[in-house]
Amino acid sequence: QKEVEQNSGPLSVPEGAIASLNCTYSDRGSQSFFWYRQYSGKSPELIMFIYSNGDKEDGRFTAQLNKASQYVSLLIRDSQPSDSATYLCAVIRGNTPLVFGKGTRLSVIA
Amino acid sequence: DAMVIQNPRYQVTQFGKPVTLSCSQTLNHNVMYWYQQKSSQAPKLLFHYYDKDFNNEADTPDNFQSRRPNTSFCFLDIRSPGLGDAAMYLCATSYGDSGANVLTFGAGSRLTVL
Image (cartoon, rainbow over all chains, first blue to last red; front, side, top):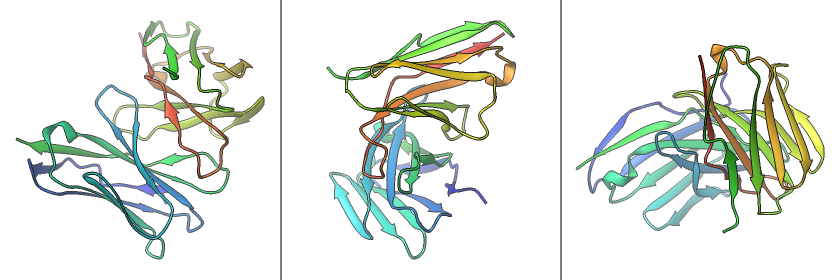
């Protein structure tokens, strides 16, 4: 069983819509959850992280965590063509290094 | 600006010809990581250093080695690159390696093996 799973996509949404990206993880002891954005040929850049169950909002981005269901999601409101990228979910437990999912490719259609 | 710098950005080598990729950081972070990322795949951790303590992932091939001569620099050596080693190599740093610490990535070094 893969540790961090994401639908590879592509997920296509029209400009201005809400994009919903999902991630599940297998290690119930996971403590911290990160969303990175990666443009083609570039390195990952952090969007936001979440530790506690519930929602965390930062501008147009909202991360949602449900530890009981081992599920973390990222919502992007008012999606823009510049949001088109691959979104990587990453998980960490204690002092172990970050484990990444394969990413979901998002395409925002103008 | 404080940052993580990787060199070279693009490296072309021949099958079996050794390659060294470098990473330097001005963040004074004590943890440095090397990830390998192939097309459409997740970044895969190869090694990390917590200060001078070297941590090798169990499935990292022996063909890959790393050096960290000081806090600021870290090198990835690929002794005999094969076609399957073509990938983006990402260096990252963090202050401490607990779950609270965010990774800062360099721009990456893309390796092509002919």
